Image: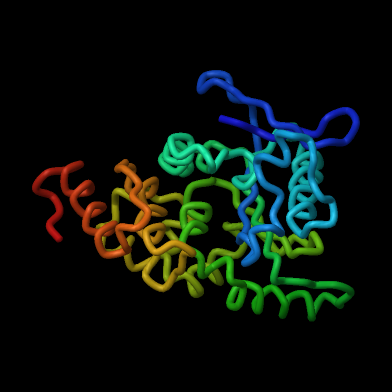
Length: 253
């Protein structure tokens, strides 16, 4: 697993750890920009060359500053810690991602489409309600596991204002996502049928059609070969088979 840290001269650097030697870390959950060039990517960090004017750089600054404030030295950001040009590494990362989020000390949700600015307390309270009902973060497929897996999930606006966490905002989150509050409180996903879990992702969207199924691999704790180009229907068909094979006779689709 690769993690990010800040060097003595203020640069973001990658460090790699074996499974049995991973230090405490925080994770960043965010919605990728519609323009991928806006993000700071793996190669840029690896080569030590990254554009500080990119919107994605602000996310890294936010995550590193928040982790430091919480006494956490390392942090994980998908855009910078996965070499997506390596298909094998990408596959391993997708299978491992739920566990990586689950083991994080904290997950910081960066809501790039929510801005508070200078408002009074009443306006901030109203903004919280609006953020949870309108932010695109809640409509993305991959963010489902990022909400479910970590024990502590904190929500921040793009100007760094803390809106609350998964516990304090559980009622609003449940209303927006149709996910039962007991799940947000950590009840085992094994207590729910696949159909119930599928309903939580039904209205969510992914850039690649197949990812709507692949983003559920960690949720169901199954693995299968990734085949971009097979289409959403075939990806879900294979996912159904993997779930059935995990517990023969228990589920039938």
